[in-house]
Image 1 (cartoon, rainbow, N blue to C red):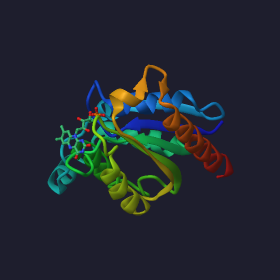
Image 2 (cartoon, rainbow, N blue to C red):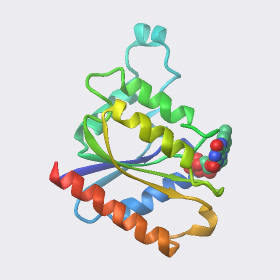
Image 3 (cartoon, protein in one colour):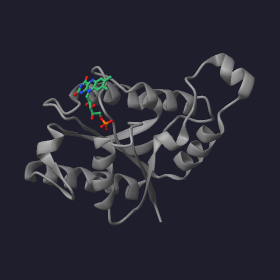
Image 4 (cartoon, rainbow, N blue to C red):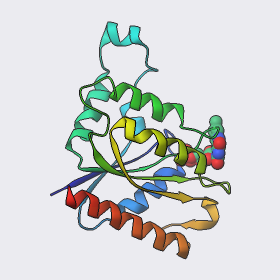
Amino acid sequence: MKRILAFSGSLSNSSINHQLVSLAAERIASIEVKTIRLSDFEAPLYTKELEAENGIPEPIKALRLLFDEADGFLISTPEYNSSIPAGFKNTMDWLSRMEGSIFQDKPILLMSATPGKRGGQSVLGHLSGILPFWGAKLVGTFSLPLFRENFSDDSLKESYNSELNTKLKDLESAISAG
Ligand SMILES: Cc1cc2nc3c(=O)[nH]c(=O)nc-3n(C[C@H](O)[C@H](O)[C@H](O)COP(=O)(O)O)c2cc1C
């Protein structure tokens, strides 16, 4: 069976992006989804000296195995100061020091949830521009603004609900075709 690796770009225990990625993961029926937290794969801030002295941190090696086993990715990232949170980027920087590209030509649905009105449009734009350089096949993006108004326990406000369902189907199709 094909497998999706799902995670948020947030290291917070109370992450709204983790809530969104968990809700989206539950809606995928045809593909097994493994949902993880990047905070369980902690690594120091990357420096070439650390890498030369200690090599790749063990948690990053474990994460690399999960990336290798996945056929596609479901990611929801916070926006920090209009861009990518440092913890998420640091994890990707470490992964990029191992063999192969980070995402190995696999499909990704990229999402962002914010408490504010812009729904992470800036970080979605940044990542859409650079994900191809990280070896990702971007299938689509999904933006959820005003999280508290638009998200409740197991649902989203209707227009977001149907948009998310369509984009999840696109991800499933891209993975099944691969
Ligand atoms: C350092 C910092 C910078 C932030 N910058 C932005 C921003 O540029 N745009 C935005 O919409 N929200 C911004 N926020 C608010 C986050 O969207 C909010 O904290 C959100 O809950 C983070 O996602 P998480 O709950 O998944 O960790 C920022 C928050 C922090 C702590």
